[in-house]
Image (spheres, rainbow, N blue to C red):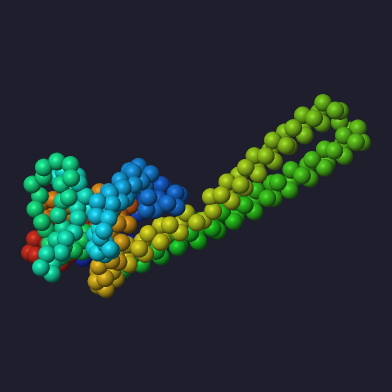
Length: 296
Ligand SMILES: [Zn+2]
């Protein structure tokens, strides 16, 4: 992508430097691209937490066996108390939904918080990891370009390896002819044949490596960028369930304490948040004056 074009796009809010910093980040290019596993970092204790939440939810249900149906509360089972770690539950009082700590384990000083207050914070949290459409489109274009370039160079390498393989076969035929016509002795034949066999195995290994490491390493990155872009649509559309699901995708360890929601973004989403949070001097100035911020 042309740096000039990018500057024109991003001059207001992003420098080329921090754009490239994100792009060249080893994680962005390495782990994320090659793993194909975008949303479930292995380093995060997501499974045990989920299991724990499910057990909590089951226990909650069992403690009230005669409840005909559970109310479909928006944040059921999602948040924990930032003070004591217990599950946060939702209750309806006088037509309003309130979130509160279940306080099952220890005494806890946390008070109720209105669901709307948390929803507003969910919006602000999502806004942190939304990629502006222009930026996202540039990233996708860049990734597609790289994919094309990689495909071209990969194709050239594969063609060359296949030619090498064919050459080996031809040499093996020749060698056999020489042996059969007794131009070479058995020892020399075995030795040369051995060399050829090794060479072919080496070439086949390289070809297989190309097969397994196809170009789909770009696909997860492209999907991720589009997902981050889509966050803006979710905010505009305002469907609370969709926003909650997006939030779940971007983070873990959702805590509510002191009426505030805190989230740990998953690594690649944190990259976007970092990227979004680096202001240029003009953006910093605007933020100081209370304009141009995302309301976070
Ligand atoms: Zn608590």
